[in-house]
Image 1 (cartoon, one colour):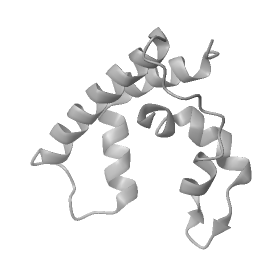
Image 2 (cartoon, rainbow, N blue to C red; image 1 turned 90 degrees about the horizontal axis):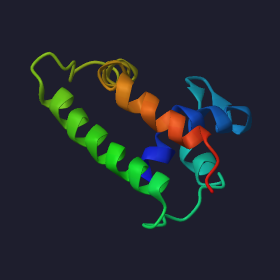
Image 3 (tube, rainbow, N blue to C red; image 1 turned 90 degrees about the vertical axis):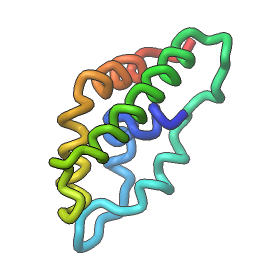
Image 4 (cartoon, rainbow, N blue to C red; image 1 turned 180 degrees about the horizontal axis):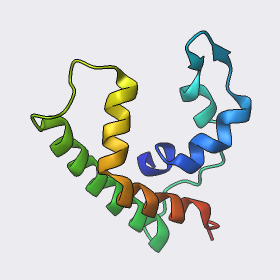
Length: 103
């Protein structure tokens, strides 16, 4: 589930286990795959809600990246910060769902 992998909650879970280099934390892709994320179940309402919000975030992110004011030539950190600021509401919804138990 892409929404779960990109959530703030998932990022916070792996922080203590990430290696660190000259530019900060590294190997996020390795640690995220070690999280106990359940397999998508189309009959689970929470899974469907996360998928729906994930699609919404993807569409909105495409709009932000395509906008004239998007800092295409700047650092990835600045670009990610702008995306997070523009998607704050949706990302908050994802984090709320991710923090709840998957029953």
